[in-house]
Image 1 (tube, rainbow, N blue to C red):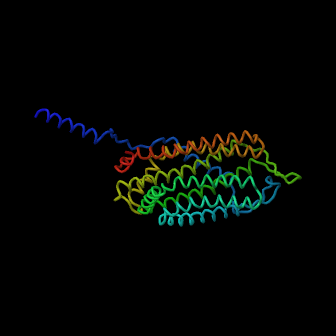
Image 2: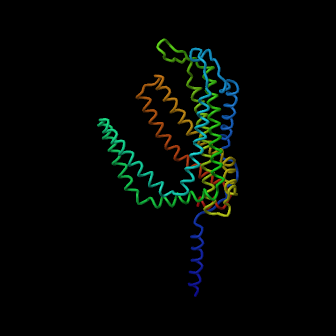
Image 3: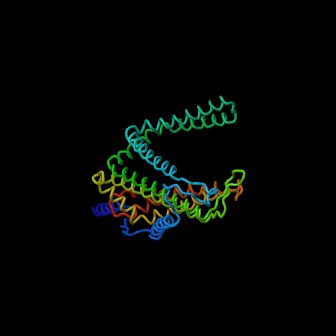
Length: 355
């Protein structure tokens, strides 16, 4: 009898230990890595100041005496093309999202089969133009693509279910799609502002002339200024991209565990966005800055190679190394920002998502 009671108590303690194998600690609500958030705002302010000092109205045709031999420069077409491209991209992305929500499984199969067909068509075109080397290369790509498609074909149902789950969460929180479009519009506006800044800096600091052979030669080319400009550009775009990335992750996590919070502008959408731009914003800026530095260095290497300031072979090796590092950093940064985002939250849904 006493042994039975002891065993019962032991089993109760064992069940309690199994039910809660991890120690749960509520994380304090505070801003993580605030220094990098300050750096981001300083970056925006610096570009605005430089654009106001050196930038000019891009929609007014100006006669630049020190640029391109005194030729008249009109930047209006570039900005019109950028605006039209951005608008068309928004329309097609909206249509693609709607199609994705309707037929996710068919799209996955169509994308795989299209890769196989295109590689075969490339081989046929190469044979038609008697390009044997290119044809053999295309056939190798066709064989590898067909083999890869055959190997993963059985996994398409699983991928389809995951895609349907994601589209269902998006449909239940449609406000996140409009928030993504707003982020894209902000990115386009930032690109236009950055372009005005670059043009102004180039007109003030770089002197370009055309020799008798029609070759444009630029003097006073400062790679440090160009690096800082590229760093600012990529830094901002990375922050915008990672902000909407963490927001979507928070919305999906809330929808999965607390579907009652879903809605067009429900608690999950508003709460996830607020946490992305407050408590988690510093960490987002930190990871974005690391990726932006690598991307800016790659641009500098490519420019140095084009200007014959760096050997082609050496530039290729450096670019390859930076590309590998960038891929690794982006992978860890993608998950690191999500872990920081959910660990900073105090909601039950986000705690369950981490668990």
